[in-house]
Image 1 (cartoon, rainbow, N blue to C red):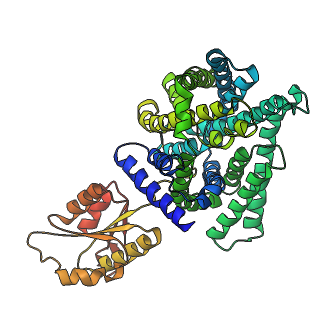
Image 2 (tube, rainbow, N blue to C red; image 1 turned 135 degrees about the vertical axis):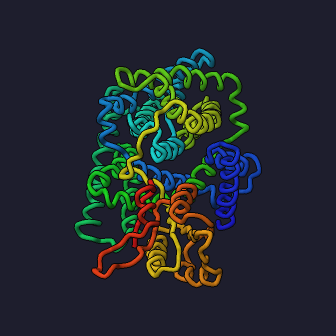
Image 3 (spheres, rainbow, N blue to C red; image 1 turned 120 degrees about the vertical axis):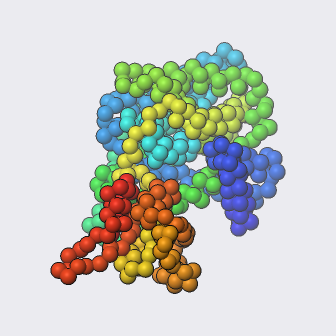
Length: 524
């Protein structure tokens, strides 16, 4: 088990970093590492890991879905009217229809089998889409119109439609339809509505335990309890007909709307867990891909997938955004951003084969091929097209975790006040895991600080990452220029002293910096 965990972490991390260096999304490298390490090529992952890979993937998916819910923007969703609602079923229904027609035409299968394939292929992958949309939100792309939020909400709801319809047609094919078709179709909104309701109740209950009863002592305990409720929602769909993916996201959204402070703290902690969760999720999804079976799907399988993506997905997204203020190029981006397949296909594509349906192996092959084609295209296309097709807006720090690494420039001289400024800056940097830029600027005829003096002063910041810069020139000009050049977030300076009446006198250097620097300056 430990050997398998080591392989996944090491290979996934290295492959992800390599892909990032080449300009590709890191998840592409992780996916390919999983394909290579999986049982169908190198076969180096132990069976102990593969036996629980589905549970590991599900837990990683829980983390990212909860994180997505904690960052949804209600105002942006409401501003687009019914677009999010339409995105929850139109793209899936239209793509499934197109795939079924293409399969009937190219393969000549029975209509029920063709529809079964359509419902498998049409589902979008939250494992690929959610982290990409959260990254766009953090960078500000498309946030003005809430495009990442629309894709997050619509894509998750559409999975409920696809999985529910898949179950209906599978039961029909196997002759186990205990209810009429109309009753089964009605179960789709039931899955969605129950998912929203249970997610809301779980969010309210979690907040009650954390805020009212104060069951948790710190943010780590808050996170444990929140993930516990999320796991209950994931497991509960074995007993009640609801969309667990949607429920987890709604739970996060409920926590955000109920307690923005708690939501922000949870987002920070989930971001840390996701660093390792992302590796496990995408490596194990890649390991589930059978290259040989995918190759057997042949050109007809490629044609079915291509027709579904080009005709079905495009038509579904454009129909969902009809009448909105979303521009054509933004709709094109939404098509690409919502096309990735992986999670749902990996979970359900093997069921027809296991149930003894004659075309089961071919269905699995086409589903695997869909993962191999759409996941990389969707991931790379999203990253590539976002700066070219979306407008960059102001990032809302109450919805996403933004810049977390701070730089503090400290102007150092011989005054006691500058020593206090260094001590205060070091205290803040220590708490925020920031970095210090220690600047000693002096005039040409001024005696500069010696190396021994500087090292003695820096003892108060020896456990904080810091960089020392010594320059000759006008101190005020050097402070402003260096802060801008180094990307400092704050400037810390010491005042010159007090006059006989104990009134503060701001020296020439501090006064010039305060009046000319665009970067906030803190005067100690």
